[in-house]
Image: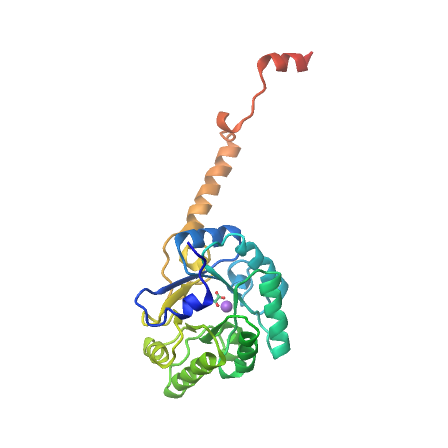
Length: 276
Ligand code: KIV
Ligand code: NA
């Protein structure tokens, strides 16, 4: 199968089969996602929370994103690998260019994502003109959690919904190849999806978007601090892992592990020779 490109994704606007996206942060998660057939693997800055254990996404650095993006890149063969630009790493066009260079050069990402609408138009335009495919992200933008006063759904009033439509259109006009819509009423996501000619990728935005994205650890039950209403858990690998390790400890403590099959033996005559 040939690798998915940003233009491939952009061409799927309004097409029946939905764009399937998930986050991943290292070689095994990216490899599992890729072999499951997802179209986009996003090394999200949710890394900060679900992998590094921080309370929000604000403290993750460009170097940490590069480190994890490079690891994820080794597990991906078909999916489009996108990396998040971390908090305060794209405040100016110059910073945005440097950050994207790091993520795509050292990190081997094939596109970048940044949060915001009208406020980040110059950055999206400059990156796109430099040949860097950009994924937009509007609605609940977790890097604005302090200003929002928490992880709260957006676009819930008439003015707020209109502002989100403006943001998505600005992102499109600046050159983004698709846009994430996070945590908003489905009607708002519908209006945006109709208002732009690039695919919308929803998370907590209902089923009307051109694609969906979720966080790997949420889908697989590997993050237990909180589970947003919009998540569907497809497995409980956290509990399955815990049970497996309880069993392992029990076996070690009772001398049941390692067993015969896990043990290397020396021929008996050799043992006798060593003893001499
Ligand atoms: O960081 C992340 O995981 C994201 C997706 C949820 C869109 O930005
Ligand atoms: Na993110």
